[in-house]
Length: 53
Image (cartoon, rainbow, N blue to C red; front, side, top):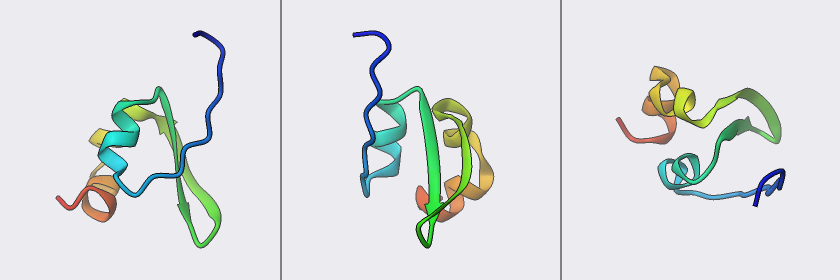
């Protein structure tokens, strides 16, 4: 469906970002980064901290 918002909390960041169009990175309960999921998958800091690369 279009125009549906789902707030997904998932430990598998790669899977969650591939299943979504937008993503948010939280640290200590605060949003520290938000972007299109594809951009977050390519972000060097996200890749190092959350994707194990």
